[in-house]
Image (cartoon, rainbow, N blue to C red; front, side, top):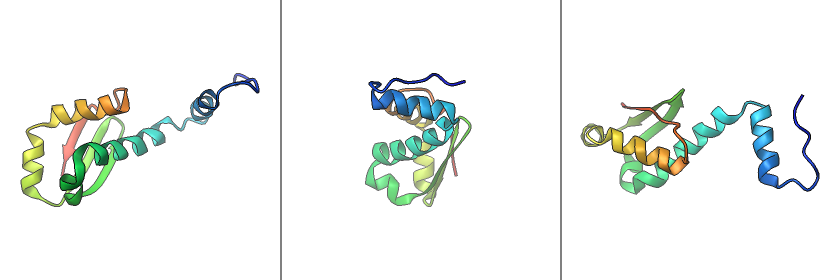
Length: 98
């Protein structure tokens, strides 16, 4: 049985409990990672980004430029660290550029 929240509970607590009870955290992480990618990479990279998909702890990013894919592949660990810092938790453990 879920914990009963009082009427004077902050909305953040109520939403957090709702997400936990309904097992929605993985879906929220997918949305948050996609937004973080767009915010951190900027317009230059976003122009060539076709798809950003989180499966488990692996982030798959489809790019339309082979040159950009090669350039980003050199900084995979830094990109993973930046994304996790932006999300304030370790969501992405591996990055696959396609």
